[in-house]
Length: 198
Image 1 (spheres, rainbow, N blue to C red):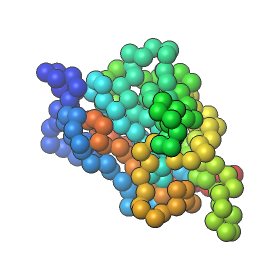
Image 2: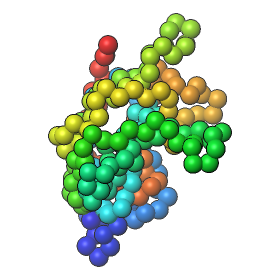
Image 3: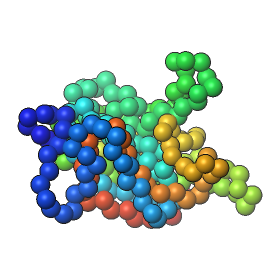
Image 4: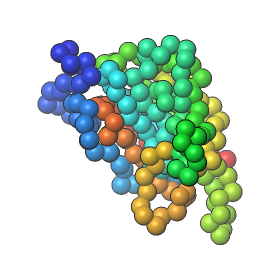
């Protein structure tokens, strides 16, 4: 974290750390070329004060990254470790967001410290005709070693899901996206392990 501006990051030349930008501006997302279904993910991240990011499984289902250390026990779906809301623009104003899931506990560390997610994600299931028969599920989400989500179904893509025009809303395979347009964030030690879950 930049000591002169706590909402920004400073960097030095080096390797093994991805950073989307030093300040809050329209930075790019990081999206894998490879597509995944069920997976185990280990990822370490660092945010400055008031920063906001997210990890989108299959480019559709978000686990929130946020500077939530000061939130105490009053965490919401939008806090670090939350499953972000789904969104429906056809609903009345103030009712468009639905199904967000707050973390079970606030496991966030102070801004400027490296934090860790260990996540087990199960992709949605489809029959031979392409009809969805089971929802996506966050089997387990650990934030800094503490359980923050367990066996939470997601009935469809969360807000700001990203997929190609004409592509189905939900699919059997999709890339992993690290959100980069809501504030500075750094990532390191990204380990993806494809698995087959029941």
